[in-house]
Image 1 (cartoon, one colour):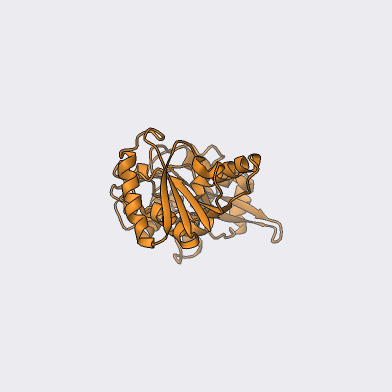
Image 2 (cartoon, helix red, strand yellow):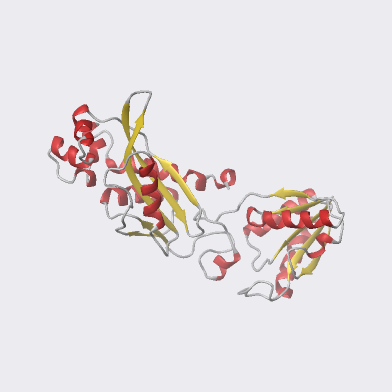
Length: 317
């Protein structure tokens, strides 16, 4: 099988090696296109240096291969016969463009083989740009502290984010609480809750991860009552958003009567419990469960659920 791959290969990082490994795994002949100098701005190594390192890595496979200089996304793919092209999620669209051009030229489509997104220690994609600025190394290890913005100054929400992120990541993290307007009513219902979480995350800038948490009431027709759930939206610096929510629980009838009269749940709980600012402390869940679960843990459930697609990124992205 004749296989083709392409890239800049500024650093022969982990994701590049996975791409090359796959090419030699399925191909009997491999063509590697490497972009010419000036094709992409900011590249720190010239073509000769990049090609030399790829060549040295490719020799170990003991199969026929060649390295060609390319000046666009097409290279030799619209002139020569290839059976397959191997791409990452970021370059899949280029493969689709190439196949469309091949069809125009009366050529057969290549099989598009997609490798999973390869992420760094911080669960964001490994890239040459990130290596170039000293954020990660070629293996994806984090070299600089990670910045996590939290769209609230509520201590419970801050602690919830810290609880989850400290379990997932074992390097230095800088947490940045930011007072933002959720853009939804003080007592959100249904989708207002989800929108509030998203709004909180979107209003944070210049961080690696922006986290928004919003709790609200969701009406369940089957039981004829409302469930309290916390929603979390997490947006990384590449704009990818993931969402999750906590478990849900119902309130005592007296609380819901006050809420139906226009009172916010937090205020109603203060009145019933006698605890001022209860939502910044144990929360309603802490009071109603008699300490079996507190607000921090409840919010942390939502944060962890929102992180699942990142933890198992090979299945989601």
